[in-house]
Length: 292
Image (cartoon, rainbow, N blue to C red; front, side):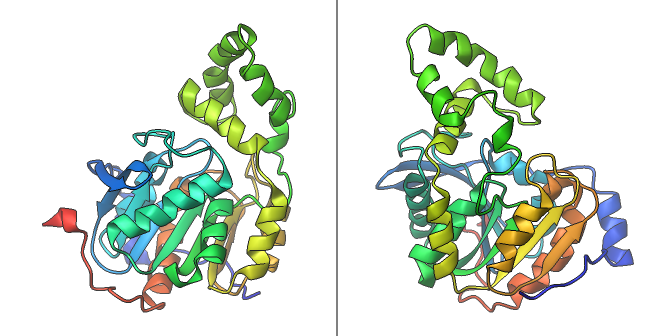
């Protein structure tokens, strides 16, 4: 594993980022694919980076990081099926999300890209890189879930498989469903009831053996970042995963919580931009077609 100590922004970037009060909220675009419509945002020019949110999540999870990356890279954010503005046309399984990501790359005309993920999205992009290695130039994993259950997954009052079954039970499912949105909010996640249900189903059907298989097959470079005070994914889970992955920058922070793509956006952007550009992706001079 290639390691590096966390790097602080340069004085110039620090000044710009310190005064950055407006996050990036681009207009949604719709991709038409053989598996249904997928909602994205697509801004900037240069090396393409496709961002995949966690469970639950949407493109808005990358508002602050996007504001810093979009002047330097082509930054594309994807709403996974059943989240945000993407309809639930694919099953809430690893295979379903992997297909959505590959279909998005196809619809965007991207032969290769860097895949950036937050939290639960890491398992999905790891599988994409393992199953379609020619499409992925590198992975950037922010607070990634790892090779075994993390403390966030253990915070459910009952095992996710049991909760999935209860939610599918007539009567009981409606009562429990009304409690999902405030329950997820108490854990630090904003989502709709439908997104909470889909998240629970995804977690219930998750197989860490598939993550381990993807890790063994992975060959592309990997950028990793985490915080020591993450309430959902403990540092040991992240470092264990990164120890099994190919080299790349490793950024560890004492503070910043689970949403380091917001709290540590400056440091991540400063390290990520040159790393992505150093991969020399084909079409790195390409611009989002929506910019025209």
